[in-house]
Structure formats: C-alpha cells, structure tokens
Amino acid sequence: MKLRLFVIACLAAVVFPGMALAQPASARLTILHTNDTHGHLLPFSYPSIVPAGSDLEQLKERRDIGGIARRAALVQRIRTEQKGRGIPVWFVDIGDFSDGTPFSTEYKGEADVAAMNAAGYDFGTFGNHEFNNTLAQLQKLLRLTKHPVLLANAVDRATKTPIGEAWRIERVGGVRVGVFGLVTRESATYPAAKEGVDILDEVATARSVVEALRTQADIVILLSHCGESTDEKLATEVPGIDVIIGGHSHSRMPIGQFVWRGDDLKQNDVNGTVIVQAFQWGGELGRLDLLFEREAGGAWRVSRYRARLIPITPDMPAEPMVAALVDKYWKPIASRFGEVMGRAAADFSSRGDDAAPYHLVADAVRETYRVDVEFENSGGVRAPLVAGDVTRGDLVTMDPFGNTVVLFKATGAQIKDILARHAPHVSGVRYRLVDGKLEEATIGGKAIEDTRTYTGATNSYFAAYGLRGIAQEDTGRPRLDVVTAYVREKSPVTPAYDGRRVIIGRRGQGGE
Image (cartoon, rainbow, N blue to C red; front, side, top):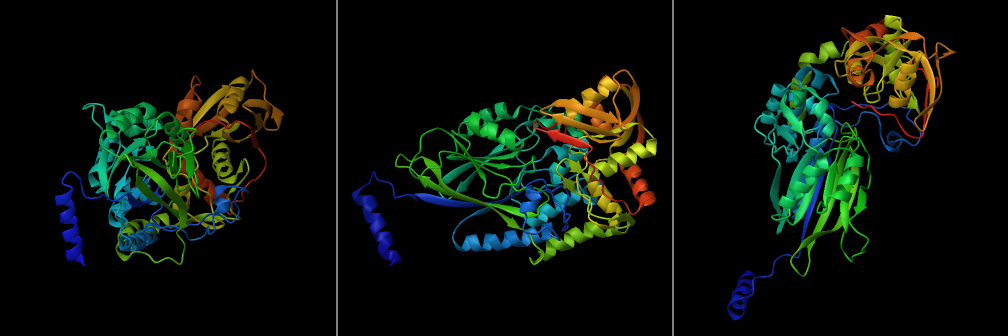
C-alpha cells in the first residue's frame, strides 16, 4: 500500500510538474501554561473562608493543592497523550515564578529556576518580581534557565539589546509560529531594572515586534507578563497577535477571553485574539488547545480553540525527580522556616474590603511603634494565614519582600489625600471612599483635623511613592520582624473583620 501511494505521488509530479504535493490543511498545538507561581514549589492551602464571588470561591479544591512535582507529572501525562495523537505540546511560564515563599527568600529565584528546568518548560518570560533582585542575580537567573526566556521590551541599558531573546519562530506542522515576550512597565521601578535595564513601552514594542514577525511567521503568540487590562489593550491596538498567554494580574480565566479583531463574522475563523491566564501559585495548570487551518490563498489562521484550567489536586502523583530536587532545596531550610511562631485562632482571609492579613500587619506595626496611623499598600501582603500553627515560613509567604518600617509625621489634610489617592489598608483609621472621593474618615474614633499633625508608619515600598513630599525616617527594621514578634507576643492571634476600610466604585492604586 505504501509503495502504491509513493508511485501515485511520483506520477502526479510527472504529469503535473508545476504542481507541488498537497500540504496539510490544518495543524494542532497544545499550550500548557503557568503564571505568578511566586515560589510555591510545594503544595499549599487556602483558608476555608474566602470572599463570596471571588476567584477563590470558584476553586473546586483549596486544600493541599499545587506543587511543581505534581504539575510536572501532569504535564508529562498530557505530553504522552498528545504525542499519541501527533499533537505537539508547549509548556510555558509567564513570569513571577519567584518572590513569595521561603524558597525565593532564601535562594533568590535559583530554586525556582532549578525546579522549572527539571519540570521541562519549553519557553518562558520573566515577571516584575524577577527584577526584585540585583542586576547580577537577574543575569544569573537568565544564565541558569535552560528554556528560552523571551523579553522583547527588557533592554540592557549599556548594550541596547534585549536581556533575553526578543522572539523566536517555531514550526508546528506546516505552520510557522512566532513567539515573543513582554514584561510590565512596572518592572522599571524594581532594583535590577534601576541598576541597568530599560523597560520599554509594551504597546510600542509589540507593534514593532509583530510587524517584524509577520514577515516570517503565520501565527503570532505573545507571552505577556503585563496584566489583563494591558493584554486587552494589546489585543485591541496591535493587529496581528493571535494568542496572548498572560500573567501579572493573577486573573483566573476558566475558559479564556476573546477580543474581537473586527466586526466581521467570518465562517470558521477566530477573528480576534485569544487571551488566557491561570490565576496564581500553580494551583491550576492552564491548558489551551489550538487548531490552525490554512485558507485557500495559503494563509494560516486560528480556526478553533479551547481554554481550561486543570486543578492540581492531592490525588495527583508527583514526578519523582522534580520532587527530589525540591526536597534538596527544602531540607536545609526546613527547620528554620518550619519553626512555629504562634497560632492563628481562625483563618485570616478577606470579606469584601475587610482583609484580615493586612489588618494583622498594619496593627502589628502601629502598636509596636505606638503611632496614630499605619498604611499598607494593596499587593504588599501576599497571602492569607490558615487557622492553626503559624510558622516562620507562613509569615514569610505572607510578607516576602524584606520591606522595612518607615515612620513619618503628616497633617490631617495630607492623610486624607493619601487615603483618597491610594486607598491603603490601615490601622488606627476608619474611612469610606466612594468613586475616589473620601466620604468620611476618622483617626482613633475622631474626625480627622486637617491642620493637626499625626504620627504614622508604613513600609518602605509604599513610602517611596505614597509619602512623596512628607518627611520620613526609615527605621531599617524589616516589617517581617515586627509582625513575627507581634504574633509571638499576642498568640493566639485573631483575625479582625471590622469594616475599617470601605471602597466603593473605583479602586485605589498601588500594588507590589
């Protein structure tokens, strides 16, 4: 039979010498993706209490989930299944793989990179938290990473060249797929970037890269650590991006998102940009299945897609080699970070604007330094506390950045301005913000007096942008040390859900 088909093909070439042999009219690709894993190499748990209607509430399982060894085993299984169908699989990470647990605190991203190498990632990009290292450490992470790191808009200030690869072109069957990476402009404020990396505008860079890629590639895929809103902007303003695999905003997209390229409804054509993102911490693995089809004129398009999130659950096996590697990094630090600092009487979670983990941190700092007010920026407290024993590692996961305590004095008018502009989490203050307008605010149960001077404290990150123009003193003491001492002294600590911060409408600014 094979000989007969070969003869027929040869005859066709003789009888119709100008006609090329028929090329495949379709191709398939499966992309498995993670983002914002933030050092969660081991399985973890969320609190039992989660905000109603939140992404956390939608998770089928919240206890003992995730872990890179389980994820690696799942990826291997999917690769094997798809290989049997002749479908290639890409395993990609969209950055912020570090900065969030004792692994990152202790090893500065190196444990995360080693585990990702062992898990077999194919491509990736870096997030803003990888830039929360020295420039030398960032460069070391780039050297250690075995898969290509795509970073078109992160440019070495001295050489004016991308610190990673700007883009690459891969073959998927007969399809040339161009892949490039971007990181959020926010990275420019982080240490490594300040030392020597320019972070270029995301949209302008994307336009330039896509224009170049479209001369060589049939399909264009972006690995974007820029956040959901920027991804939507890129999809709208930069023609030619077929797929965006996203990160940074910790958006949970169970079936993906779609941005129309135009008003025309075309038969059998995904006429727009597919956007996917897989929430955070590796509790779920993103999966995107793509079908490419070739038009009569020879151009390729995305004709079908399916996006989903696969839970990484306790019943899943762990890949032995990856598990052993993670254990190698954990054992030297286990006793220190496993030390019990105190107990949590209940879950420290969030109920609407009542964010108990922030209240714990803010109360600890305010009471320790005996000031009138304490401010914490949104995004600066990274994880909840689960009821029961609280270890040093739990507190590091909640407060992983090494920010120090900053003291200041401000007038009531200045404090009102800070509340209105930044909507911080607070201690000593109760306030209500409606569409960016401060409707009411008290300190110590009394209305804020504009001309009175109040004492305050905050963390060094928020102080750099939230206290501009206000005299301040950096104590040099890590906020984590203050919180740890507070938990020891006050144990068992009880979460506060007291309505001290009410935000209606437009949300405040200030992440980390």
